[in-house]
Image 1 (cartoon, rainbow, N blue to C red):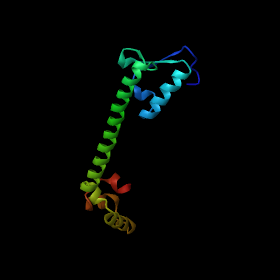
Image 2: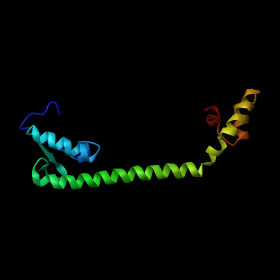
Image 3: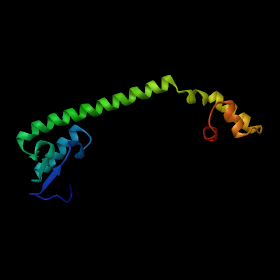
Image 4: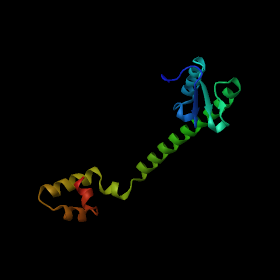
Length: 128
């Protein structure tokens, strides 16, 4: 932004290249318009985002992009919650109770291979 001058043209491939959220994209485009820099969006055939006709279209694209990001965040959170509730077999074997048992076995001199076999884990898992 610091290097742009009046009359310059900023070419943007995707709106998310301007900012991470809808509000910031609108602020950025408004700032560009104030300094007389054209912002062309390639997905709209190179239309000038700073023109009044493209402002409405850009806002629609921004809204859809924000919605997609919100869905992605919701899906990620849902997946993490499900994974934590199902707890994988390795996670169960590495529970706090079993970790203390593994540490106790290792402390009394049991080998890593023997401890790994006892808890059905790999050697690197025991070492971690």
